Length: 256
Image (cartoon, rainbow, N blue to C red; front, side, top):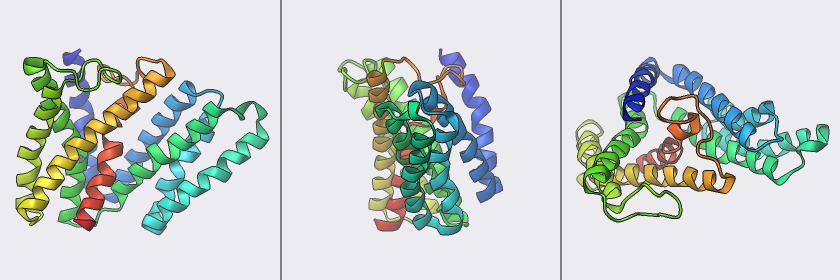
């Protein structure tokens, strides 16, 4: 399992980093691909919502953020409701709670958070912030994995994820702070307090994102929402942490 996870990461990491280096349009193109993969997985897990309906709900916040920024994200989230209504009218078989849940998840859980990655300033600061939002969860996940493997004794939330331990969570938190805080302090001119806050927030939000998806899978009684990525499951299994960290990094940058 670890071998497959490492191999998949070696393929995905260059794609993610290259898109960040190329700029906003490359990032948006990758995000649309991620949104399409998430829509495919949720449309299958939460049938009978069609793939196109799920894709539209997730893509609207992302596409409208291009011309209208934060306002476009909100508008896209609101527009997903009439978009869903069109499908409920056209296809009576989609009038189910599962279909409604799929639309809301695609809009609020996938589309809105991913759209925040396009809001960062087009500058050195923006690139560093995107790297923190994207790479930070990888660091947290690695720290949690190895700390849990070697020191894990006490289960964190056994009803949600039977493999996560308190020691693993603390290991992920500590490693993320040790990496992200100095980067933020040196490259973003953050105060020490703000650097520590963003380091801790990235790890905490990353772990919450993972637990949120674990809860969803338990509700749906599935092991993975997809199997596109060997060792990782599906697209949502890979970006679940990013869906929580991207908005967190953006608003910490603005507000703290």
